Structures are given as structure tokens and as C-alpha cells.
Image (cartoon, rainbow, N blue to C red; front, side, top):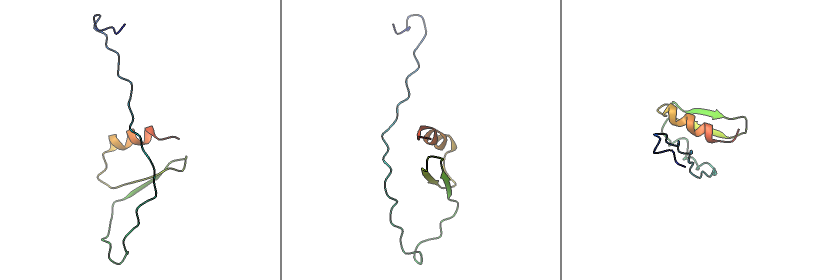
Length: 70
């Protein structure tokens, strides 16, 4: 029973998109690359590394990290 007639709605199960972790892209020559500042490196106990910039949405980052294996 869905419970809709009683006014009780089932909370939707969380859905996740498939994510594949690949090799990082090759960086351009450091002499020609613009200076990038404000990067934050996060390494989880599982060894997964996430790099974001200072403009990252904290709520989105929290959900992404929560979905990764520990």
C-alpha cells in the first residue's frame, strides 16, 4: 500500500549516478599554465582523492563525499 489515501507518502529512495574514476588529465607546460589558486585537496581514508576549487558548493561536496566508499 502506498499510504497516499492516508496522507502518508513514502520518501523516495536515494538515486545515484554512476561515477568512474579515471586518470587525471595531462597538465600543460607549467611555464605556460596560468596560476591556479584556491584549490583544496581532500584525501579520504580509502585513498580516494578529490580536488575542488574555492567556489565549490559545500552541500554538493558533502553529498558527493558521502556517496563515496570509505
